[in-house]
Length: 239
Picture 1 (cartoon, rainbow, N blue to C red):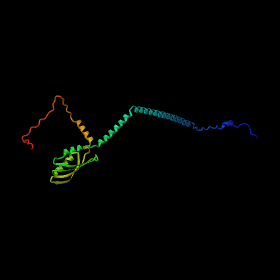
Picture 2 (spheres, rainbow, N blue to C red; picture 1 turned 90 degrees about the horizontal axis):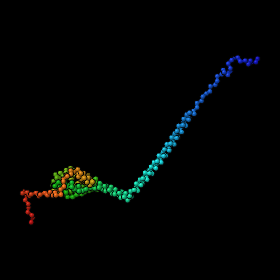
Picture 3 (cartoon, rainbow, N blue to C red; picture 1 turned 60 degrees about the horizontal axis):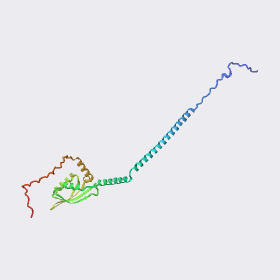
């Protein structure tokens, strides 16, 4: 039996099946565009920075060349012979300063020795060793009236400041007195020429200045001789 073409349902077959829903796929085109934009910006910034560095380098080189040219012109403005003479003078002054820095003045030692030596002591010999300006040694022999005079002399040397570490040895009593030997060191600052001159200048600067009016008619004061005393009559001259 043949099938009848008449449909048994009023719902069409196409309408009964649901329509397929299109699936959306994720598209990464937005992130790629952002990365590309950032790369372009960084590239342009690097080009701008490189150009700025190049221009600054050119400016520095031009400025240095200009300064060098100005210095060369200023150097040519001075006389080379005068510069050479001034340089030699400066070298000589430096050498003289070094020589004076280690120069000693033995007269300061002799003056201190004269002022601090007792009348009961006499020195016979003196050995002055100044090979090392920072360690000047002396060696002397002398005669004292007594052993106590030697002890007192050592105390005076220690308090004076010029003679340091005095050592008395070979003390021997003889008919003409007590013979001894003295070895000691000298204070470098006490006999240094530069320090002595600086001390004299400072002393002269701090000394009070007496302002006395000058008069051309003023005569120098002459001190009258002291009258002879009756207790010491003048002795007649020797025949």
